[in-house]
Amino acid sequence: MVVAENFRIAFKALRANKMRSVLTTLGIIIGVAAVIAVVSLVQGLQYVITKELQGVGATYVMVLPAQDDNRGPGIVARQVRLTWDDGRAILDQVPGIRLMTPLIGGRATVKYRDRQHDPDFVFGVNQNWPEVSNYTVDRGRFFSRLDLAERRKVAVIGPDIVDELLLGPDPVGRPIYVGNLPVTVIGVMEKRGVSLGTDIDNLVFVPFDTALALFGRSAADQVQLRLQTDSAEVVEQVKDEITRVLRVRHRIAEGQPDDFEVVLQDEILKTVGSILGSVTAVVGGVVGIALLVGGIGIMNIMLVSVTERTREIGVRKAVGARRQDVLVQFLIEAVTLSLVGGGLGVGLGFALGAGVAKALPGDWPAAHVPLWAVLLALGFSVLVGVFFGIYPAGKASRLDPIEALRYE
Amino acid sequence: MALIELRDVRKVYDMGAERVHALAGVDLDLERGEYVAIMGPSGSGKSTLMNLLGCLDTPSAGSYHLNGVAVESLNDVELAAIRNREIGFVFQTFNLLARTSALENVELPLVYAGVHRRERREKASRALARVGLADRARHQPSELSGGQRQRVAIARALVNSPSILLADEPTGNLDSATSEEIMGLFDDLHGQGNTVILVTHEAEIAVHALRRVLLRDGRVVSDERPAARDGA
View 1: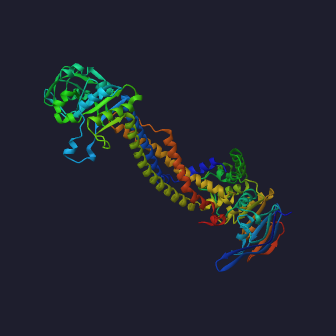
View 2: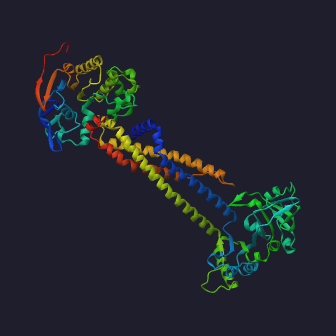
View 3: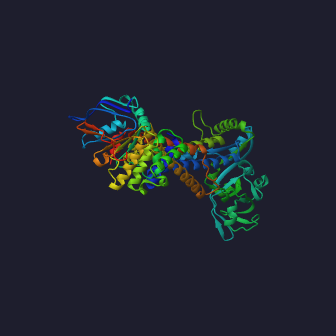
């Protein structure tokens, strides 16, 4: 018998019991919707992170003081230190570095006349920051070597700060306070939006030495270094050299762990990838359970359907349906049921993903569900339909036509 | 060669401790074009005989040749094919598929015969026309009267041009006027050369047939061909 004919019969049976069909497939709908929503969000996240990291390029290297989580509290922990002297030593001794900036961050209130505002961070960096981290100044300029050398009291601020402090259309040249420090605004950064949880537009940059004065001596021990190598090929080599120089400077004995971390861009990508991978795996497990429950629901309703339609099965057999015809008919009905659930799930998941992406701050890309995810979800739906439909369909196909025709 | 040849056909049901001989050795020959009523009180074995004749079941012993084919040796798939090609069932309770148009109900045997959709439509329409329901093709069973439903069922039985029309109490659920109409239809179909077997316990129905086989306790107790009735 033609398969198309069976699909027609299946749809007719489903339409006859619309409510029941939808309730039955709820498990499948939820399972598939979860897959699609999560895949679309993970894809979006990956896209955002990748774009962010590609902005700084494969030549981007970060050097961070080690997190002292595996050391004791108190005195010992204080010995983790990374200073700008370390940075200068690296510049002197390690070949292949194009640009470097130190980075210290802290919190301070900014003030202009009677307005005040708490930016996300106040960063102390040097003149290389915009180029190292791929930032652009929109108005005015960034600090120069001269600003740093002469310890000028200047600041470059994010566009949000301009709005918060009501600096007007011409903020460059305005005197503001960062903490207790009077500085002059010399530039405004380009508007970028939220990225990786930080509102980039809500930052204040001051010269490195100014930041040291602002945050005190203890900040000088917790400097991060950001640098760009000459080329992507030398990144690994630079990392090894930095490690060697810092171990010597920090007098770390052989066999002892580093008290700093050198992080490369592709390592960040890898870490992000593995985190997203485990998120996907966890969701996959949940979805597996949802599909299992959905499948049992389908098996249940198919058993009901077979009982309800015993006479129909008898009639079909009397007019010439073979066992396999009845088997295929009910199997296709089960698959149609799960496939309809899968289809609804794809739609719901897509809407869910799009909704969440819209609700998230920052420039999340429009929900994008790759074709493989849709096909995978629908494929699994079919599989569930076949697996849980085979028993009821087999039961239907084995009915004795005489008994079935007599069934009341 | 006869269309149907039953030789010492027996059917035994194992009901736990008891063995019930529903058919205890039936011999019966039917020629093509005959109009037969199989009669008997309930428990006489006529339902069992009908199931065997309709190839829904196989005998425990004995032989059944239908159109020269030894039915007792066929497997499930072959039996299904024989039912599809050779037998047209008409049931007491019509047994039409609900929420399915008259036309689609009539098409059903052709679906399992693997007939192409368009040819199916044509044949089914013709069969509906033969039973006088050409204008009811799109109606569902719930929109038809009892007599109309049985006509649809008869169209379904006819559509694949079977060797036998096998009707089990075809008027059991109809009032007497409608019963006469339906029996008139069977008379016409017989007149057009169809082989018709009626299974019934009602004498008024059986009089339409030209041959009456009476069963009792699983045996044929009489097999008579009364003088042709008026007009036949």
